[in-house]
Length: 260
Image 1 (cartoon, helix red, strand yellow):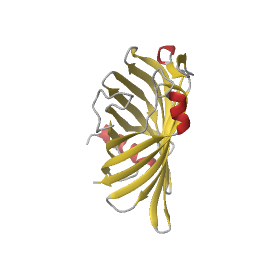
Image 2: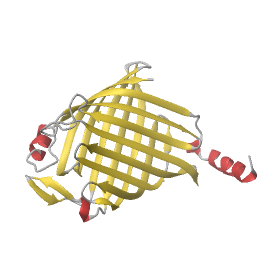
Image 3: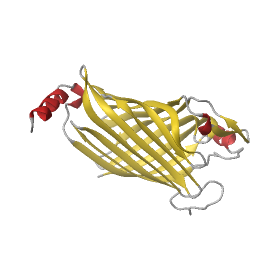
Image 4: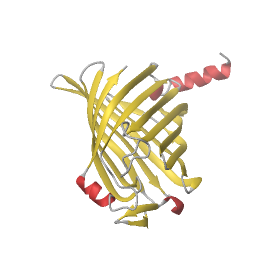
């Protein structure tokens, strides 16, 4: 190891957020997403973005160490359907890859280069969100939070790939025990702001309207680690002026995971 590499390693080790052992995890899960009646009523008026309940299979995994973290998932929605099913119930695919690379310190907090790519597609539509920016991580006892802020580029069918404002957000978690059971509360949240007009065509009350330049998207989840291998959870899923609809949308997701 040369002198420059040694100095970088020592600097990173001084950040409290970097002081953890290498880790990895992976799981597969079966999920059922149940949109609220209000969401279905608001969105099914068309002309697109109508919400229907659906099941999906997910493969998820991640790894990390003093160098940073890597996380990803792949969802197959409506896995029992064909890719050209009617009424919005066709098979669809969603995936996400997130990278956080430790590059320095701000006090005791890590400074991270942050990037993520989220991709959604079905037979006749695709939409990909790309974010590049900075992040950090804070841990206190059983609580952790990892915020980020970056430039947002979107690659959408019929629009192309262009700058689409900024995106910020976080993932957080808090683990605890209750009645002798291992539980965890988590949240992921994304805020898009200063979005470009070309990406704001969304459905409302049966018409195509111009959505707000500000959007929110995320979920809050409660997990029960029933055993080393099995985790069950319920999530409150929400979105506002996202997912093709210029309105608030919410759902409950039931999940059963097998941990490898």
